[in-house]
Length: 366
Image (cartoon, rainbow, N blue to C red; front, side, top):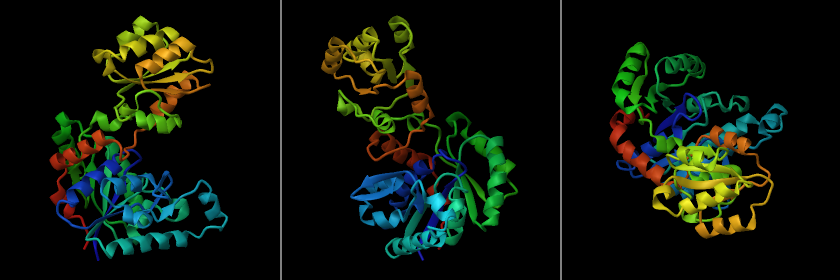
């Protein structure tokens, strides 16, 4: 029986996939054969001719696991599946069997398997494959990833523990992510004292890194389903701020203080031309990641030529409203993909410095 660990999260966007990357990186320094399993997932991509969970595609590319694609992503959820289960068209037990079989296949050739859940522990309950239930069925001890803070973490744990207890889940430890470096030890100390009566351990995870919380231009292109025109070599630049070019050109330039994605209406020819020129000046080049050009009106021919000659990256959202685009982008939480080299290299480096792999290794079942 291979060692295994179920990586769950207290809520969405707690850093579960970041943690999985870090642990896989560290594990491969000690174990020769490490597997990865995403029991079920609804956010999919096409990869090597298969529709698989996006996190499986990321891990397969980053750690050379492509030969195991079908096994690593045993259940891919469709938009209709919840209704199909309620209607009796899809048997939840069949989904469970596929997941159990996938782990068994990975165990045949792996010493250690990391199992990454989807969303919070209750996700999948309507399909009878909640994260908590799968952790129990796979007999996998759980490492629960949380955000930083004190009261919020403890309050959420109170609810999740009741759910875990119902499913007889073996919660071994919580891993606290998004810690502020200058308050790291203080936060962990308070959490350990607040949770001193619990059976699980409190471990320190990744410190908050703004680069990991922000999207790349590539991510925005995927989110809006729009191609990037202009300089395609800068798709992986990090966007630290999203600005709407609604103010005067002079006022807008005063707001341009960090690498930004700028949403500009197609009628703002003066601002479009100014940004195209500034993009070619090193001082401003670093501040302009790219443009999203909104509005139904065509960019006039002269402005268009200047944009193309400058090679400033831009996405043309014809008919899009600047305010709506701004909200769509700001609501999205950046997801790491294999092409995000800067982010992944940082995750590996931070894992070496901040994750106590020896302590986490003690959680693995045998």
